[in-house]
Image (cartoon, rainbow, N blue to C red; front, side, top):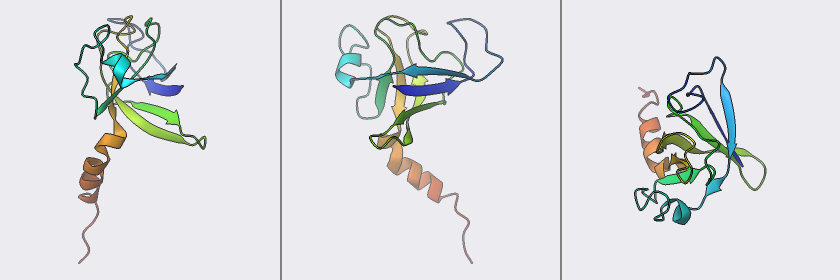
Length: 121
């Protein structure tokens, strides 16, 4: 299970929470998320992952975009695996949340971060 935290709506079109919220969701296979019963090929498989439940129930929602999807690696260390990106509604059956895959963006992140380093004279 992975953890998503955010200040997004508690349900689709609902109110925003007064406190930071946390949900626990499993990573789903890209094949499952991109099949005809789910996103029908709309997911870019090299840069996106999906997490959630086939029956809906729990999901990130409006206002959570940009928030972290954190998972424990095999050694038990927490890692940032994704960033909340998009989905169809909130907690809709067969439409789990879609996240930008951090690993796929690592070269771009490194390039951009290197631009922030102070230049030495």
